[in-house]
Length: 292
Length: 208
Image 1 (spheres, each protein chain N blue to C red):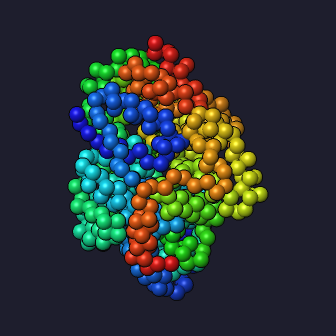
Image 2: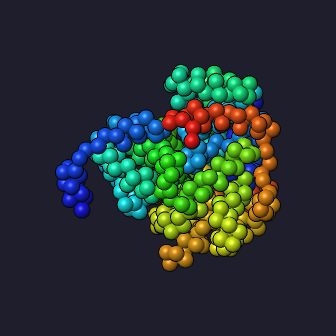
């Protein structure tokens, strides 16, 4: 059985628990084993810079990489785009800069850890598309989501900064997965535009504008359900949708799912226990019933 | 407006001291040496229209020695970290990293480019340093309470709709809303803290 480390990260432990549960169900159905990196710590996301210097954030991620290397060295799969981008970037920088690696190892020594640089960091979309493949996904989709127009909102960090598995400007991988589960991806201009990320905590008005533009772009192309592969994208598009409506005088009412939730439904898994649809704030059921 | 500012700049004295300070003490600060002032970063930034200066102008101001204006500017802390400027810069300047470095350095130097973001950033790091992970509810609570209980309760009430929805859908732990409650610590938190203390001291620009 293929094995990976699942780096769930902090969001999937709480606000994106529906992402975590659906990732685990889908990978189980695909026959892939996911293991936890024992004693993992937060990646620092893109917020650590405010109170911590760059080296501190590098060390946070190097510690996780060192733990993964010592615990079996399997590829790390990160469902959270922020975890993915930060950890992958640190991994690449360590690989390309032996002096930095040496400095970081002198710090990791405080915890009797050392990192050689043998671990790979992958986004969940990368693993689904390149390791598992659309044919296998198609084969498992016993209940294809026929006729459902899905806005595959990739977001910004999901494919960046290196474009290792998809284009940083015109990504296609998410749409290929949407097709594999029988649904119809809609093309829209704001596919990779930023949702505002943590700006919703501090500058709400700016966030409303960014999310409003994304929802406008996708719904104007006929999307009936949105899907993402990033906890903050999902949260901002869904939890703040009512507020966006009030702020911009709109009336969006579009469900926002994680791609693995749609996959779980198409695989015929339990909509609540496996796809975890009942943890979505905007009900998803009606939009997907059209497929049945 | 930009034209007249530039004309003024040309007549004022060029002061390289601040640029040198940025190269030496700001994380990724030396990267701006590669900037050719094309403005692709400014054209790509999702929040450029909310800024007084664009990243490009911030870089020009650094070269012109406008220390206080740069370090006090809210623009250096308005980044959503979307990486668009990084992937598009034709000279491979990691613009976002420079902005992050500037924001961090400004706070260390006694400036507060954005009060709310600074408070949130500190609350977020506080969770990481104390427990090794971020309990989102605890981070939000610590941030709201940064200005005291009354102000925090007011902010919490303003966001009541979001919090209740998250609670109702099992995406938030009610316990984290209670002052004093921390998230669960990772097993080796003590050694992680030692590592972070060392990284703080060994980082560019030295410790605080």
